[in-house]
Image (tube, rainbow, N blue to C red; front, top):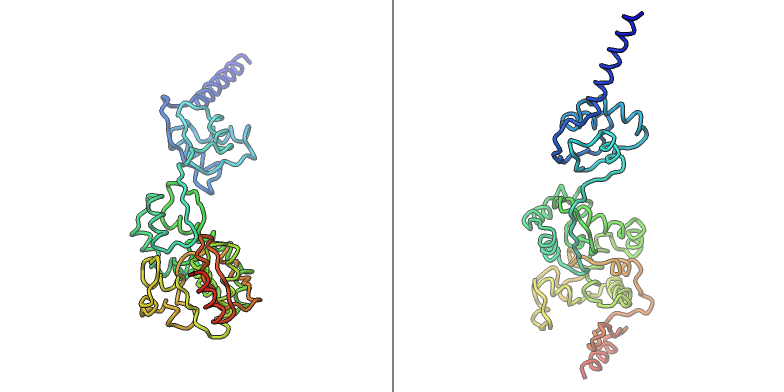
Length: 327
C-alpha cells in the first residue's frame, strides 16, 4: 500500500508541476500583435497561440476555455498581448473583443461632385492612389460586380469614416452600397412609372442636383424636365453644357450652347448619355416624386442670392420672368 501511495503522490506531484508549467506564461514580457481571423474557432485560436509562443500548450488553452469560457465567442480582430499574460487573461480579452483600435479617417463627398472631383477628395483624404481609383472606374468586371454602369453618378455623397487599412476597392464598395440603399427597388419602381430606367433616373437626378440649389425646389425642377421629356422638348440644361465644356463657367456664352457634345441638351434631344455628377438623396427622391402638377416647362434663377427660381408654363411667361430678374 505504501508503494501505491508513493506512486500516486509522485504522479500527482508530476501532474501538478505539469499544470503549473502549462499555466505559467512562457515569455519574457514582450508585446505581440496577435490576430484572430474571421471564422476561427477555439481550436484554431489555441493552435495560433501556441505557434506564437503565447502559451506552452494548445491543450491547456482548450482546457481553460472549457472550464471558464465555454459559450463565449472569441471575436475576430487584432489584439495587443504580452507573452507573460495568463491564458485566462488572453481568453478574456478575446471574448470581450478588446481589439487594437484601428486608425480611421473621415471624408465628406458633397452632393454634385463630378467623378474626378470625388476621386481627388478620396485620394487626398484617405491616402489612396488616384491611378488605382481611376483604374477601378474602367474595370468592367468590377463595375458589373458592383451593379453599376460607371463611377459618374454613383459615388454617393455622404460623410464617411473609413479604417486607414482599407484598400481602394473597399472604399468604393462602401460608397456605392450607401447609394444603393437610396436607389432601392421602390425608387427604381417610381422611376419606371415615369418612363425612366434606373440609370436614366440617376442621369436626371444629376442634372437636378446641379440645377437646383435649394432642396425645396428640387421636385419642381425635376418636374420641369419630366414635363419636357413627355412632350419631346429639349431639356436645355445649362448644367449639361458646363459638363460638356469640362469646366465650370460663371456665365455661359451663347457660343457655349453650340458646343458639339452628346451632353449638350441645348442641341440634343432627351437625356445625356450618362450622369454629370453624383446626386444626393434630395435630388434622387425629387426625380422619383417630381412635381409635375403645375405643368411648368421653364425656370430661371431669381438672381437675388436665394438660389431660388421663377417657374413658367409658357415661353412668353418665361421671357417676362427673365426680364423681371434682370431689371
